[in-house]
Length: 420
Image (cartoon, rainbow, N blue to C red):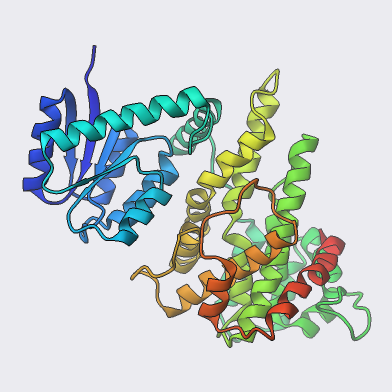
């Protein structure tokens, strides 16, 4: 019978070496890791428990913990650290850590922690509750991740017209005629641009009936945003009615949030509200991708093996990772990747975020939460991240303006209904 295995994430060789020795005495085979990548790589191969130094600056323990929870939601985590603060304990609890051991650890404290991990794991199984998705959902998630890694499920390619448009827009002096030539290659996108240009949000000065007039009235940047929205929508189609209905609600919420984020960006004086619109539209694209993959798996089954609630729970827990992967594949740039990956962080105070990235995270969060407050969400529980008040305060939106943006949700939803 093979030993249970433990992974130790701690760059302090003396401390990790001692923990390896103690775990060996307690019957576990332990491996020490100094870096985040090494830790995640070892967990890829399987482990029964992770010991993590949350306070390690070199390891960036808080970020590692979030990565672990995204990729391995069921693994028991024990924090083993020195000088832990109250905020660290709260952070660990929020991320489902099962125990906390102060350094220097002893055989007694480690043994007690392992007993509590075993008890809590048994309790969750017997009670049928756990922070992780059910076993079938976990199996499907593991299958999806494996198939993505081996290339049998490919992340979707960016539509060719968008790739051309993106390269074209790199030239700030591009002419409307050049934009028009690219858009005319895709009649479906051209039709969406015309429909969007005649909504209340964009129209108001007479009906537009041709693409050239739309480009002239709206400008290159706005046209680019509309084209990117139409192209993204066209990447996802669903044969099963249940998945089609969920996607429509998902897509409508994403579009409304993107419109709101752009308006909020203009309100706070951001340098590029159109870019904020696109980031907001794309930062949850991992949800659409995961929904499509689950739908394809369901189509191959002779019976329904998961409820939609279980599917959405799996998407809720993993979409940020896949959204960041899509942003990377589509060459959207590091800021898009950061926001897709971190928009559900408890705070946006990481040192890797510059001032504008932090602002865009709050803009997206306000827009997402306003949409959820209007009943347009599709999860049974609210997603992690700063609350609405915290993001409003970070953006310095006055109390007098907050009702305006709440009211805008219904108005924008009416526009989105026309073009969806």
